[in-house]
Length: 167
Image (cartoon, rainbow, N blue to C red):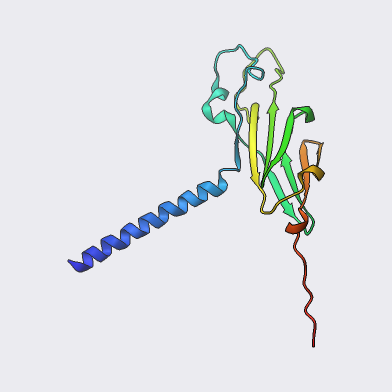
């Protein structure tokens, strides 16, 4: 009976560990998908609902990179089809926040989309930064569908190399 109790306890611990592992994976990857929330301005179509208006049609992957060197962070986000005036960038404590709105432009009055892999609407993306940055010296450039943001590190966050001397 004692072996059965040990086995039950071991299975409970294993199940708890698996659940905790999945929660960590979801927490770490939740920032990869971005929700595009339809707004009144971007929802211009008066056509009946089609395949493309399923709930999953409002999710998209904003591919991005966060690169760090000794002096700064460089964030690159792929946001094709955007106008730079529809982007809003903000640094709040240790988080970079990028907001924007992709607007739907109707291309034709006849026919239907069978597959549409472009998301339209407003989006919000939060990117945690590992160390403090100088937000007043940050720069953003939008070119060819890629948003590049340079964030200089705060002086105390840059670290300092200490040389070892011989005696």
